[in-house]
Image (tube, rainbow, N blue to C red; front, side, top):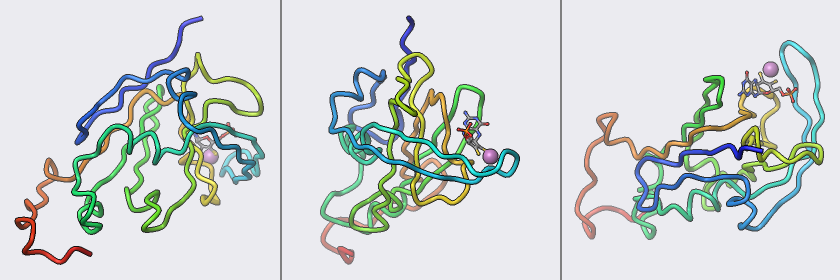
Length: 160
Ligand SMILES: Nc1nc2c(c(=O)[nH]1)N[C@H]1C(S)=C(S)[C@@H](COP(=O)(O)O)O[C@H]1N2
Ligand SMILES: [Mo]
């Protein structure tokens, strides 16, 4: 069996190429979710895997950890093998902000995702559309590439 690989890139000190066995090295969480699909109605699934926040924090996002406001400009862009694409904000999964228990699932309904790749699980979403499956890339972006201003020197700004 060929292991699917996921490229974790962007504003990170430790970008990585991850497989499901790599993700099994982090604390695993289980969740049962129900979501509605516009075309197929309500779906129920059980997922397990690490928290997305744990995966990304391990890759060293390039914000100032003591300035909470510095995290607010970060987004997380998730891409599936078929090109399906969704973004989250960093604050959505940060325990100091919305703290959603988003998982990077490595099993669905007991079936390992080693070959097909991990799936995004968002227990807070009513709709299923952001549950991107077969994830091939996650990009963390602090916004400088999108024209965000460079932050004020440390010590002058409010810490948030
Ligand atoms: N890669 C990928 N993931 C995807 C989609 C997709 O088109 N491509 N569709 C989404 C939508 S619209 C829904 S409702 C759920 C469907 O999940 P299910 O197949 O388990 O019902 O997957 C989501 N994840
Ligand atoms: Mo859907």
